[in-house]
Image (cartoon, rainbow, N blue to C red; front, side):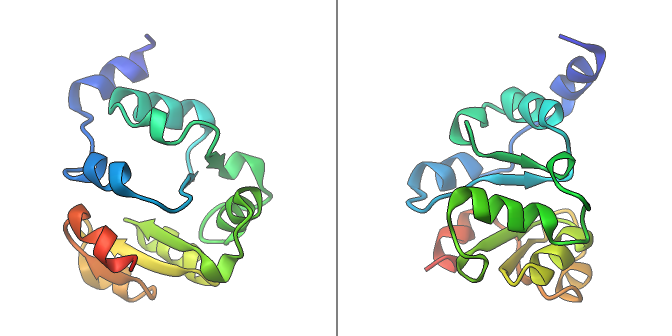
Length: 138
């Protein structure tokens, strides 16, 4: 394990409720991240979430422009075989929310650690408890 992984391992924990949400999720899902593949695999591995996203990790390193441009979300939608207008983005940053809106996707802003108004200003629908997500998706 490299130093970055060791440092992350001490503090990184999954978002409260995310495993239950992923267990009951019945729609295609993926990760479209500003991080590279190694970082995604490391963080998802440490939090025991990697198995939910095997073969469904998409990085800005695979597209021309990063967030706030919509490229990574549009790329993920294309690879998942879903029209952008039928996609939902779950974001916890204003830049990511802006990118999701620019992609023509509905954006849910997870405002547990980020001030809600910053996500809302970018067009996100705010929620604060990950366990709310399945109800928002209906």
